[in-house]
Image 1 (spheres, rainbow, N blue to C red):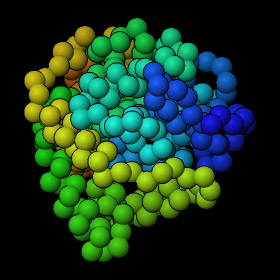
Image 2: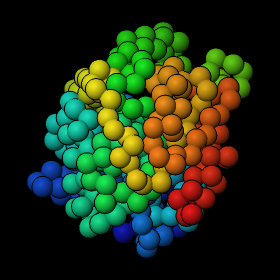
Image 3: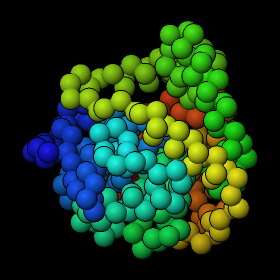
Length: 284
């Protein structure tokens, strides 16, 4: 169902809309100016709409049209979650085109960064600018080990009554622990009309896709012509930070940001620094 929304609303307040994509309903939230090239947000493993960091979304939406969505089978979006990155990318492209956009900026975080790379490689004319955070290339170091790492930290989270992201996304230093608590608190700012929980079947499909992506042959990232910004923390356990440096070296002209004492969620931990840099990059 589609509802009217205010371009000045915060991410915690905007309604969830829906659109038919070739017979499947995809849900999304939109905020910021109604004009201009939109920034499409591509989310991480096990995440739906309520897992986008409000400080990142609201910060970008201060001057840019921003759209966050649940891909097929995720959250309240219908259908079965694909088990390959290429299929996820095709679904994302179909969603973008269903909204009527001929060109977009992409912001892919973690798994979303894998999908963003696939989109820009297969649909280069669709992507104007590209932001890749907490992510790596196909065949990148340690990406095929995401499943056991995630499961161990999920067990740790259950035993300590903490969200697994407390361990997966942040360092164990006092600074990292403070950032983890602040981030998880932000994810609860939306009080009503929250998204549907992430399903076990969707989680399994995403893990399968990530493992295959980590084992596949490297792609020709030198073919990417969209201006690209690459960012991460210097202690990413999920997608080792060496992958971030590798991306920046292999994508022509890519800009690189590495945050000290930060993990997989480095851009969340350093949102006050990252958002202005991201906006400057997008508006250049």
